[in-house]
Image (cartoon, rainbow, N blue to C red; front, side, top):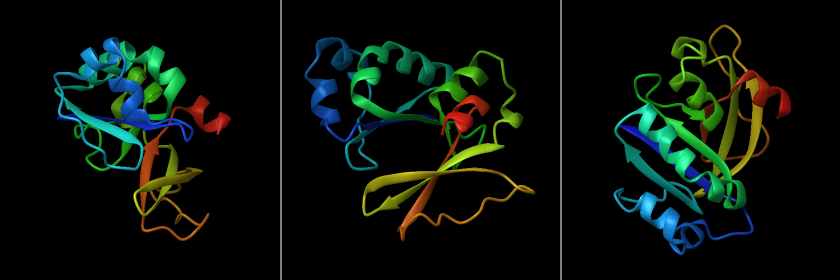
Length: 151
């Protein structure tokens, strides 16, 4: 199963915004909604293609209410997420799945809330420790080169 996670912008209640509107509510109706982080919604889809299609269907809402959209496909990595742009590039065949691990954003998890990301590139396959603040755990999100440069 490929998982999609949407993290709401700080000034909105993501669940309310997505479920109070008919189009987004209909797009999410067939999924079991989960909340892995504060102000987030996660769903399991059947494939990377289905995950990217769902994100495309929700694009109007993502632009307005979502700070981050992540996709985790176990065939690429069971623990690390892909950014929406990276997931799209892999799905469209513009990037090989084996070439997705160089640039990452490492988010801290403080309680149940994602906190500021640390943008890093892998050195000899490893990542530096998250050092922006004390956190309970971290979440690694793979990025495109353009997203990394913009970070």
